[in-house]
Image 1 (cartoon, rainbow, N blue to C red):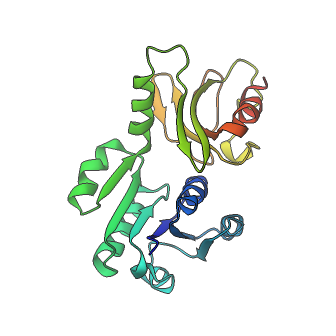
Image 2: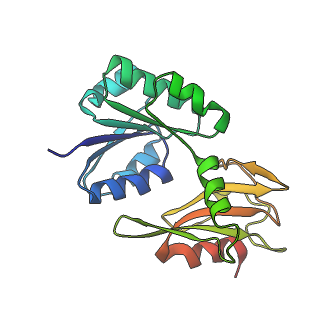
Length: 221
């Protein structure tokens, strides 16, 4: 019998994960409180989509999350992800919970609270950069969904068309995620209202087919 996975919150992360999991023969459901994003997610074949706030017990109950083998919390708010995992584990008796966190300092606390797996985007991306530090090209290629997803660092040059724009204003191709922004020795967690600046170093997670198109949108080259 296929294992059941629920993806709660998030959009780009959910879209990429859902496609990969479905191709690997999981039964996948998504819960998202943004109706427009729900409509986009519903275009993915075999993905069951529920509209609602995943931190609310009645939403989880209506979606029958108690049937899940794995729940993955992907909202941009660490606090919401913890609530989702706690509810799924303690109220709905889900076997395994996974949470995305933006603050590496919260990783151990989440584990102590009973979250089975904690994934820190910044820590993961930093690890990729460190592994590639001695290589001229820092691209790391990972097989996902029958194709390839690249993790790529792009520096915004002077006069880049994306400089000065907020992330939500960018018309990036599908299957493109800005995972981290490196600015003046700081790591920034991207949000929709984050404004890009010249000399920003962007860590992209992008499909092989869309890599060049994404680079053109960001750098103009």
